Image (cartoon, rainbow, N blue to C red):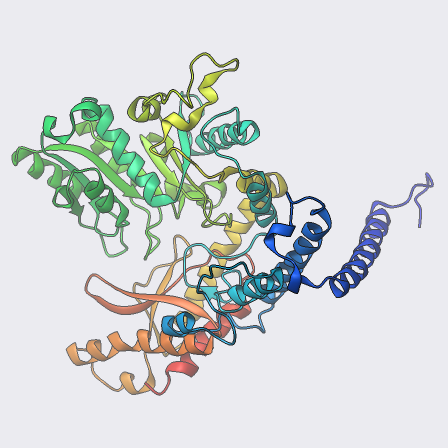
Length: 540
């Protein structure tokens, strides 16, 4: 069908294009099948692959086989009829399973065995991209991100200097600038770095906050400093305490601030703790607020806390590893109001944005601070007389030397999705959490840990088996309820049908913590989870 000008309709052109792609794909599959049939890998070894002489053919055939293995696994991952995992205990893996051995050999194994090992590794692992995998804050399998990770591994370079990673270094700068603008720092001189996970990003925040106040720490150490205090909420991530231990501040100098029932830091409690620390002769240094707590998904009142930090000249960090991606949603970004006043932010795209692990950004509002804090000017890497702009040799800003390329997969996904694509994804994930919340309120065997609509994608609840419903509320019932979630989780893992996390929290006995970050999850998967919990736990 053509229009009045005699041009083919765009839809038909697209269909024709897709048909030609399909035909080419079928031809490749046929060719690949023939090549796989004639290639016997039982007598081919790693030493026969490139850069071995005449290794091109074997290399191509081996990688084709690997791609077939990965494609098969990806298809199974997205098929809800398949199990999330085929669970085995550690001793079973160590002893060997159906010919799969994890022991290392002195002599080389043929590539046939290497391919079998790859299949078995995937077979006995967890399909974190499965639509019914809800166990962690990072889940899902984005195909563009996967392609980005493949390219990154193929390039196999290091992020410490521009001369060996020119494109990736520039991409990192572009991404950091974009994230700074989204936070609200667009008009200021800002800085940042991608780091190996949110815990390290949070460590950077303590490191630069301490250096900013006490630059002598770099040369003289903690002995030259007064006793300093860090403040976190009761619901904060444990990584700030760990950072205090690593940096010599000490966990006893990390002060936990009381939260309300919803899990938000109470500003008046924070001010009271600051004043108490000052009376004790310590120096209040730093406050870590949270935008999206790990368990409840709560957002601290950032603007109110910023007022207090400014009043007492404290560094304000926002741990937005989990909830930072809500800044991409016009519908939900108000929940982070005040983040633009922070001195530093942690943001993990490998969570709600669905970027493959790992991908974490440490963002700081003051340019030059990272460099001054960490720079050592190693002469074999950071020569000042290079023929290009050496400010792009970003490796001296970090506590690492070697640094993995974590930026390309995020850059590629942003190109493929656009900011709007991330917004659609995030809105959909929050909608799923709201759907689960409403479902739980209608089911008599479930009880919410707190009755409030989700702010993020966390939903916390108890399953109450029929037998337990007959017992009056009290210590005996709480003791029994504490055992329900672990028993159901054990059965769930043994059957491999789904995965969801549980934990106690404060005075709350074990409950299920549901989180949504998987773009493959649908409402039917939520229904399945609730029905599966009831099936596995009704006799408890």
